[in-house]
Figure 1: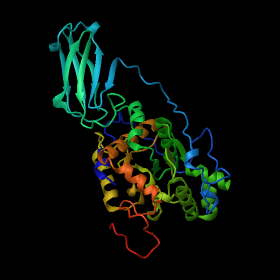
Figure 2: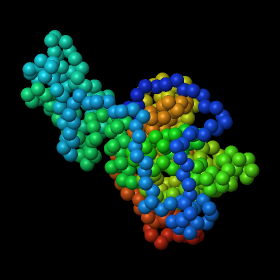
Figure 3: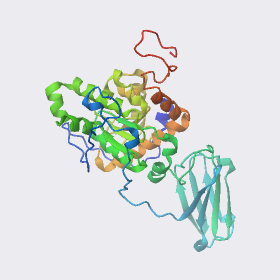
Figure 4: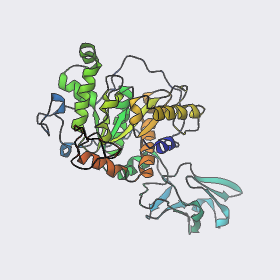
Length: 390
């Protein structure tokens, strides 16, 4: 795991909320449809659970937003090496750039203007979509518009908009993921599924719930399965499903939570590493909605919990690429959690621009379990020969 990227993630998520305690019995998250295993598998299955559709037949659902994006009162353009803002100031009566005050650092922007003796805030962006070279910022008045020019640090990254909003993240993250799937892991299946579906709808990927695939194949609920055959049987079956999904692209996979989930076991991550994995971890700090590096009361506690989990490797979830900490759960804040996941993934992929390509190579070589030190082609994980990239 790239700990620095995980720790830096999610700093721009707005407004904490009072967490509601989650009941112990699992209540299913309603879904408009259930995913069915097709009759024709893309490879010879070793069990009924291996019969998942080939990657070429997966099609994402249309993106559906719960609320319309707010109307913008500015023009925004990305010119590769720089971005430009144009704000209409005709009605403010501003005649000189001396009446304009632009406060900027590498990650935020505040634009104010003096009009009729009053200092007005024209724009306040607390988190820019990416870092800028603040010392090279220029602004001027062009007829009835205030023009602000910002130099980007990462020139290859295309900015959908000026800020790190839900709309910007869902539009811009796909250029960083490059088709690699996203896996949501954690102790709570319902949370995993709700967040996975929200992310999938936002970025145009296909949502996949391993619980729905397993229940469709066996025609019985996960709870009934666990009661009759035990958690090991369910974890084994989910591992086969994850193997089948490992060659798919543009999916957001919600995994089972708890001891019946493959992700809770150290030896079942071979195929989870084929995607970017996000661990949704409920913080022991409690009391409020907690993000890593989010400036709330319990930030230090949540940060320390994440560090301990990752460094000690006490739980298998610590194998995830990024960690998102929560102080509780309320379905009303599903989008906020999903947005935090996208922020974390953006920070991760920007910190290591070769990571997506490395994931792709791992998939092409067959997900042999040699992550993150990928062995040369021809290496046999079943052989007694020790790995060369230790």
